[in-house]
Image 1 (cartoon, rainbow, N blue to C red):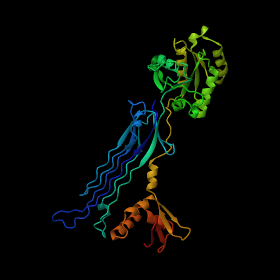
Image 2 (tube, rainbow, N blue to C red):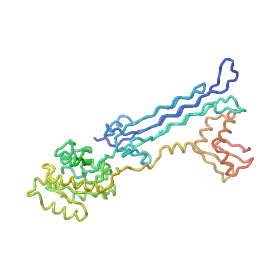
Image 3 (cartoon, rainbow, N blue to C red):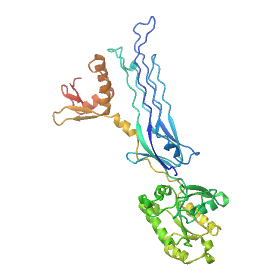
Image 4 (cartoon, one colour):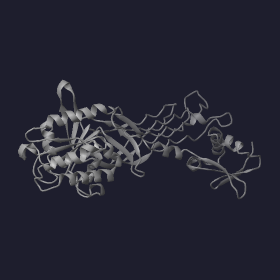
Length: 428
């Protein structure tokens, strides 16, 4: 089965912790703190690889993690930054947040490389926390935590033109005749199990990319059959060719087939039916004179709707040139920019939430309540019972702007500040 969807777990690198150490050299008394900063964690980067055309690799490996940053070292040495992890994907891959189904990035058009997760920043070494009152700080800042995210990769084939139609109407035969593609051709339902791409070369070096979309059936938009698995590949195409069996070799009604496919396209995504469309009435090589009542009905029904009908034979090539030049004319009238989906979600926003806090006044007792992931994390690694720990706590409140925000809220000396289980009176 064609691998055009995969769900994986990605994780950025954790920032390295700051180091606690003191300068110890002969003849140097009380050398002071010299703990270095931790290194930055590695990023998760997705990049287009033109040598890959499916997502099959992600069936066997589902977890991808960048390298964490190293802990800082003594003598003010900075820890080594963690290596970035570059994940190769085919062009046309959309990266979505698995939880919300929102688009993070679309690796199409000019966007061939995207940083999806940023590594955690390194923590500061104890050299940064020395003050005139505390000249030997025995603590350092921990590195920022890694960000883990489950993402869904979805491949939408990039082609100018999409061939759609029920099984056995001749899509693969037409593709093999007009392009360099070599699809499997046989009289079985769903012979085509993956989108096949080919390049149509016209005169003067002009041409376009055409994709044979696997056969649709009624109910495809609801998940019936294999068609639902490939409807997404029509979304990037700019023109659609509906292929029908004008000879009705298998006894099917081409008009009913066309309306059934349009119904499935509309149910999956109404915008698909707004794309320019043409009808290729195939298998005229078995018709006397190349015309019949079915072709006349198709013209009478669809040409007034602005959908031209081209009688063709994918086997003999009759009428194929007129079809291709008609499609090229439509493409020339359309915008040339590739269809690229806009980003809807920034995964690093979750990290920003983890680094946030709120300052509110309790309606019950008037206490100033300071809460949030940043506060909870700080309280977890700060020993407030030790003098040095309490001095670090005071410095943290000032540097993070918490004291300034309390003053903006109107705090006065003697007012109560509550941070989870910690409660104290405010004094300047």
